[in-house]
Length: 522
Ligand code: C2E
Ligand code: CA
Ligand code: CA
Image 1 (tube, rainbow, N blue to C red):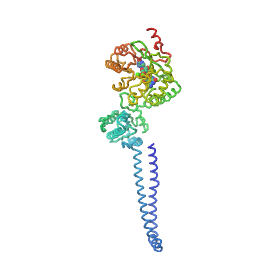
Image 2: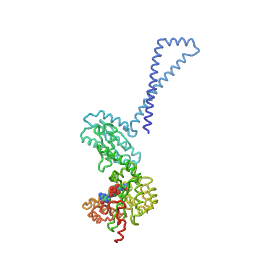
Image 3: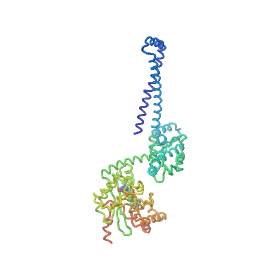
Image 4: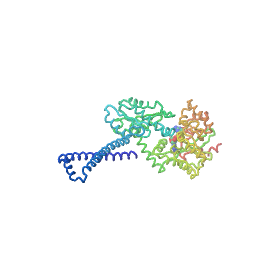
């Protein structure tokens, strides 16, 4: 909006400048020439002198002097107006093209500079474009405040500019996104060298007042003319590469490849189809038993959502992720809650529970708790038989609000479990404060548990931690007898995995899991 206003005023001023001030000056100049010409031609002053003497009572000579001064004043005023306009328009130009905080070119200017680099790039070289995004800038903003975060951006801008002064340029594209461009060699190591050079800006922590702030970038890299022949597509390529860098574990920069563009299109297509599928009730639920290996009973079920599209099952982590990205997660989450509570309400034995996965965005939505409680009420599902599975990452942001939300949920008797435990950043002190009911140890620790000492130690420690904090432990992804025996040895009783049962639709779940045969045999 501000850019539009600026552009509009810029245009207006420019037009005024060109059409009026300059025109005025031109007219003034022509008129002066004409006046001079005719004055000389007709001896204007002498004639005027004679005429004024004849008509002394009109005070023409005095009037002439006054007119002369008004004229000179008018000229000075005109010139002054012209200079002011020029300064003003230069300032507007600057504001429309440069970022006011860092004084770096903005995205508009960056595109022009990119075109400039592209036109001057020799045929045997590349223009390299790197989009840099400060990791966890939201957290910096949150922890240290807006003013400090602004200072961080200024420091980053200065450092990047110093590293990129020779032939290229650095621009600020968005809040914490910077673009660095230059001309480079076509060998791969040239790209790596350039990235390494930019990375050197991270080496020294930024000191602002009493804070010492470490920054880290994720980067997306694309090359002209290899990846695109115009600035818009080149920038788009850097965005796709950046997204890949941010979503791939262990990677902090990524060089664009054509598949990324196709991947984006594929995700967009899936998001549209998912939207339709949710509206048309085409998704369905499966349930996987959670097994107590000590008592040989099924303690409950985890509800998992399924979507068949074009004859194949779309992996849940993929479409759940797409739903989060494209703003469909609340509709998806609503469907999952409504469908599974309705289906399981009359099926569960009194001492069994139903665990439902809640994604981060879904949990953070302000309407989540009211609509959950409303749903529990309308479906007549017993709150103490419901458990929400939240991941560790969901439990980091906005801590105060989180504690309050957890408190409200648990007050109603609904249980809370931390899913994929061990893969995130839970700090022990926080874990104590959060007072959740259960930890679900991530499947990755089961895979190597039979022989791996590290995995065994981790599982054993989590079990001990759970006992201390009065939390139950479930371990998921148990596939073999060996794993099961080892886990029992390490103190895990509650297990989930293909060894006991695969997730299945309600009609395919064996009756024994609902406690029917268990109670007969015991
Ligand atoms: P999760 O919450 O960790 O779910 C457990 C996943 O492990 C499920 O995959 C389950 O089918 C799989 N699994 C269970 N036992 C075994 C085993 O023995 N071996 C192996 N290899 N895998 C096992 P699924 O159903 O593909 O779901 C993947 C992820 O998608 C879930 O991970 C969860 O994060 C998400 N998800 C699934 N359903 C929902 C849902 O209704 N809502 C939300 N928000 N997320 C869901
Ligand atoms: Ca889960
Ligand atoms: Ca899990």
